[in-house]
Structures are given as structure tokens and as C-alpha cells.
Image (cartoon, rainbow, N blue to C red; front, side):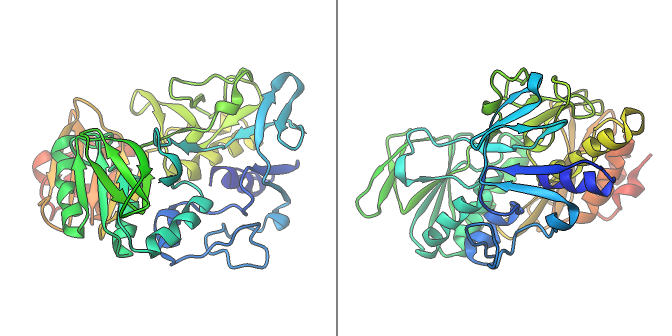
Length: 403
């Protein structure tokens, strides 16, 4: 998404030079959200190769030839030599005037996973998992975060017995506080998935009744047709070693407020970059689709119109997920000291949680209440102050709760 949008935005802003889009995967650029949804269950198809002459339902609807964008597929970046203005690749060097890093993130593999462990990040990952779900055999999912919940949802819809193993005490532990995330535990129960918390998977070994067994930290083992890890992702930036491009502690490119890296002529967008947020007073590393969509607009503006015409990049982060029959959306960023405010019954089908600091709306989680998110994103951008009494009434539109 980030690389494609950078190319598209440059052309829409009448960039006169050549545009080359380099990608390590052999497939034509495609959208990733369907990988954990329709692709897994057969609702969307995507053939291996370039997609030429095949059905490629999740490929971006972009005419790269008409835009004058050269696609170099199946070609991996291996290094950058800023002094020479050259990008090293596994097929030889490429000269550049401006280089935009859009390498995304890589999933963290399961320690000691072995042959039975799977990841879900690419089209090839999803294609390998389709027959696993079709077999309707027991599966173990490691991690009850966004990707773990989405995969467990798809597996249960496919008729697979599913056990989810989470190291923390509740789902979405890295995203939501216990008082909110604890409400999500019953979603697993209602879907017929087993959720085991406070345990880790220490390895995967050959099994008896199933091809594999997931070994747990408590000494027990779970039989599984396959083990799918969703334990996090890290920026795909290891190939930048020795380039001079500064990285943060998580490996993300340390971009400035216009998404420039520490090296002149090199920019970074999407999952591989962190940026300073004046709104939240800290750096943000956002591994979500929306960030990959909007960040390229800043880089394209900077390259075509200049810094004076390019406002600082400081979006309200946004994410959505479909899990266990629920549409979950999150906007903003909350932290310690932010006060939660509930809208509606969290045991019901539709509810929201707002996080306030000094009355100012900072973030919002909505389950089945898309209007709350649509209004909440605008209110967060405005740093709107809410009346807690009105905001806690789910019948009152959020925009009408502004003081």
C-alpha cells in the first residue's frame, strides 16, 4: 500500500521524472487486509506469479503502465549507498535521485517453531494456509492480538477447532487496558474458540493424533494440524545496516515530521517508519493500513511542492478489524493517565470507549458503532473537549457532546 500510493500520488501531482516501484514479492501489488479474511476462506482469489492472465481479486486497481510507473517485481533491496545515490538489490544496483522506503514490517517468527509453524503476512502465507483451514482440523494460534483474532475468526468460520494461546492475561494486551480487553474474552467463547491466557508456546514438535503438537510453558501440549503465530511484527529494515539511515529502538526509520530520514534524499512511509506526533507529544510507530495510505501524500507533496506547501505529518491513527462477527474500529492513541469513558453496554452488541485527558478526546474504540469513530476522528483532530455526562450517553451523537 505505502509503495503503490507513493507512486500514484507522485503522478497525480505531476511528478515529471521516472518512477520505479521495487518489490521483493513476485506478485503484482495487492491489498493485505483480505489475507486474514476472504483469501483464507476462499472468498477472494489470487494466483501466484505476476497476476497476468489470472484472476487476481486483491490486486490494486492501478494501471501502472498508464501512469508511467515501472514495476520491478521479485527484486529485493539489499542496501543503500547514499554517497553514490544507489540502491543495491539482489539483481544489481539502481541509481536514484530520491528514494522512498516502503518495506513495511516483518512478522516475528515463533521461537522453535519448526515446520509446523506458519506466519500470515503475505499472499503466499495465506495461500499456504488455505488448505490447512479446508482440512477442518485442530489449529493452535499463538497471540490474541489483531492478527491472531482475525485468523481465529476465519478458522472458526471454516469449521476448524481453534485454541488461542496468549502470554498476557487478556486479548489485545499491547493495545487495550485490562478493563476494556477483558470484555473481549467472551467473544472467543461465543465463537467456540478456546482462549488460554498467561501461557506461551515454547516450541512445535511432531505429534501423534495430529501432525504437530504445540508445547506450552506450563508443560502441556496441544495437538494441531498447524500452529499460526501472530506475536507481533518489526519494521523490515535490517537491510539498511551500514547505510547511515538512523533507526529507532524498534528498528523503524527515524523519520521527521515530513517523513524524511536522516539521510538526504531518502524518505520513509508506512510500517517501516516512526514519526514525531505533536498531537501526542511522542513518536508513533503505526502498523496499520491507513498510515500506509496517507503517509505517501506527505512525501509526494514534499517532492513536488516543497516544504512550505507541505504540512507536518501528524494524522489521527486509525485501524479496523473484523473478528467473531464484530466490526471493531480504533482511532487515536491513548496512554497512561488517559481516562476511559464508556458509551453503551460492553456486554451488548454495540458500544464504544473514549479516552480523555483533561476532557480532551484522545482516542476511541468502537464495536459496531462506526458513526462514533467517524465523528470521533474529527473531534480528536480538533482536540475537542467533551462533556462527560453527554458523551457517556450512547443516544447522544458524539459531536453533540462537545463543550
